[in-house]
Amino acid sequence: MNNSATTRTITKIALEYNANDKGTAEMVASNYLLSDTAEGQFNEMKTVAERNLKVKKWALTGYISQPDEIGRVLKDEELKQIAMETLAKVGVTNKNQYRLDIHNSTKHKHIHFIVNRIDISGKCTVKSHDIGKRFGEAVREVCKEKGLLTDVEIGVQKKAEMLKILTETIRAEDNFDDLILSMKKKGYEVQLSSNVKDGISGMRIVMEKDKNFQTERIYIAGYKLSEISNQLKISEIKSFFEVKTAVKEVQKYASNLKEFRENIQQKGFSVKMQYNGEFKANQKNEIQDIWINKVDSNQQKSGFFFRKNVGFSLSAIDPGLDDLVKSLSQNSVNNDASNHLKSDPNESLIDIAGELIGDFLNPTYVSQDEDELWKKKRKLRR
Image (cartoon, rainbow, N blue to C red; front, side, top):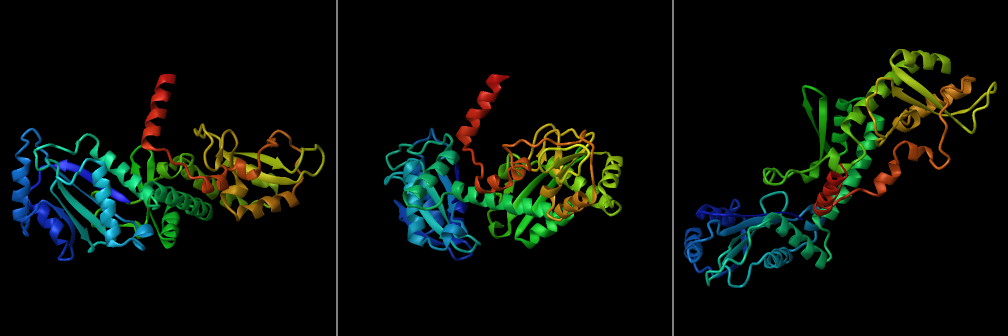
């Protein structure tokens, strides 16, 4: 579940907002509040807060928003219980003043809370340190206890689905404009960022159904490309489209392997052949795949599609180019062993092409704590 929690000094406006929501708000819980008006409740909270003048940001405010995956089955009482149990985990007791309201006017139903961190005896029961992080962890704990998917688990599923759809669409299209249009038809918005030096430099993908304009300032929908896959980079996609465009242009005028290789080399690309079995001189060697790489490529590491020092597999980057490989193989006899790519017997073609299927089935997720640990380890190695 998406969630947010922060400590701050509030005014009566915060309580008015909680109690309104375009007239659809429903108060589902309150404690130690006698007044029926927002102004009256604010004054009651302020009076209690002044019992501990050391605490300036005396209110804890935030929300829990249920995604569609949970919201279709979760009742209001269950959502209230999740909020109450979560607040208890971060220090809220039965001596704290609070008000909880369910809002229904937005796309995703959510529950807002305002809590006085100072209890009626003047004690601050809710620590402000890392409250947003601690609240999020508490929400996940409660969800697990109730057998509900957490925001992290839902995120892993969504990123795996996004990666699958994105790579399939990349293989089917030739440029970013067509990629954006095709992804749109499949229910995804692709947002590109750019800079003067590199041109297109970043990508964010958003599920259309996840957009919530009422909370977009607090919760940004979607994921950056680096969050979806640690293998697929924007620079690789740019190279991918460049190679595919060059190959499709060259194949129009190449009737055999020799012409294809000469024409693609004139465009600044290297060519390596992967044969079925061992290469045999002075014999017809059946081509299994053709690997293309830009001569001046500065890509140093293997990526999702890219293989270091070899390039892109034609059969992997575009389903249609597999026919080109077969055609050139049937019409050509190649006795040149200098551009022969020796296959690793332990690698299948899909493995060489970036472990496409493996990445779909095993989405990567690293918790924030684990990520920080790895960052520290990398610094120590330097």
